[in-house]
Image 1 (cartoon, rainbow, N blue to C red):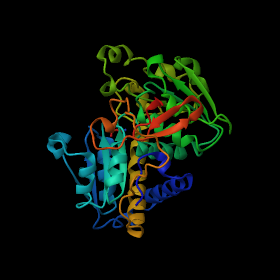
Image 2 (cartoon, helix red, strand yellow):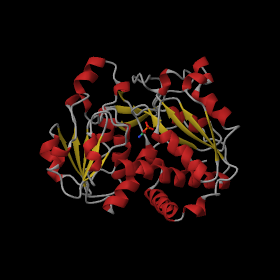
Image 3 (cartoon, rainbow, N blue to C red):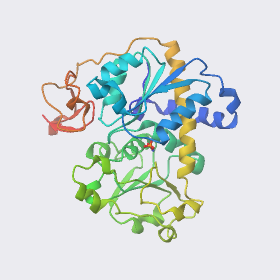
Image 4 (cartoon, protein in one colour):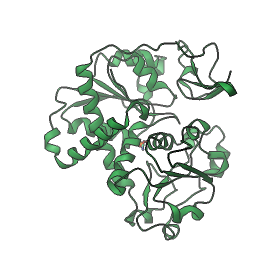
Length: 363
Ligand code: CP
């Protein structure tokens, strides 16, 4: 039973297959109008969402399927203390596929280990957001025609911006990409994502706080919102929230064919006047998200029909145990029954990472 919790759950060949299916859906929507007839998607959104939730729902309806879900986390039995694991087992009795958003990092992984149906991570805390990455990849493919040989700037909250983490992970499987990370010191890219960037195959990595200085070099500018909901110190959020505001004046220094992406929602970081610039591609990105989610739902349902095996059990072999994850946003802080396991990433430095949220620990 295949689930997509991390973008790396899809091989490059599978991403290519999804891009091709999405392109075919765009060209021939009628061909796909009945392909999920009789199937149900459960949208389990324990955190707010506009695009991801509604695009999953629109995607399933456009495939001829149905959707079940709840209005808010507070209206579910999670508010009475039901675990993510039990929720996943229960929903497997009602639906054919799950899209889950959860504030706890690793929650969709736990769901996938307990559900008898495919689980798609629709965003877990500040960790991963693989279907936003699929939307981003389709947009880059359609607007730039390639993934390799580009200079890609990520700007804003690179610490908590899960869409940034997932897109970097995805792009690292191509080659000749210059990453330019533009953020204040406090919102720099986490080490576990930075460490994934290859030191060979033509990759370069630059960090700066100065957007204007690097603007003329960029092929893609990926703007992000400073994620208020992830801050424990509101004063720090208020100090950082307007660190970068893209306006038409700043865009004058950009290449004429640079594209501006943003996972949305925006707050203040792109002025509305930029929307009229042909380089602004963030609403195309929204549209592309629906097509890629259609392609993914279809792929996972077809594979589940062929491979009706029960949920894969987590093997403890090869992992470290007997320690606690220090990340307050980790699913292990609320699911007390979960076995805490750590993957060794650097034996020489005694560094391991929580298998649920990737938080570093010295052992
Ligand atoms: N991009 C994105 O995840 O938007 P929502 O939070 O509205 O789903």
